[in-house]
Image (cartoon, rainbow, N blue to C red; front, top):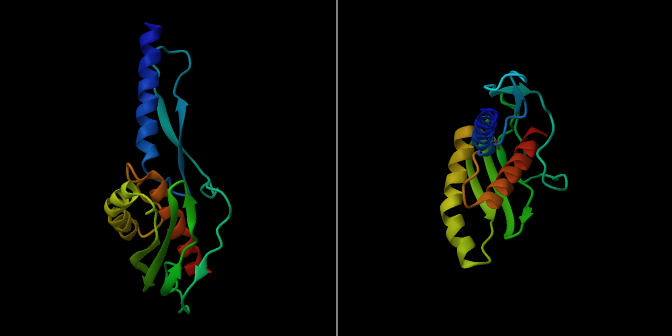
Length: 170
């Protein structure tokens, strides 16, 4: 019976990890697992929130560049204008975006650079980039879902969006 409990516990932990691995966690909370009971053979982990202000990992600190003059900030803290994010390298090429903000809201995201050195990269990104743009517009932030099959592009895209938003707040 203890083996079955361990397998159930492992399967539950994997399911929770998979659930959280497809969305970039909000800066205010990161899900962690903590067992509800250590002596019971039927214990299951329960997710708990842990505050975290750590920036996402991914190499060097970005240096965002604003490409437009800024106007006064609305309640969202974002200045209106066009802001170009940092270019982020991955094994298949660089990813860089330009974010347009109007009235404190992200109104469009234009991809400036994306991996296109191989036919497969072009095919993958022709499908992934429009989805990533929709994710940003819906979320109104860089906290977006990663597109399966375009993990590196998704990560670089989110990082570039974040650096553009940082420039819009500066």
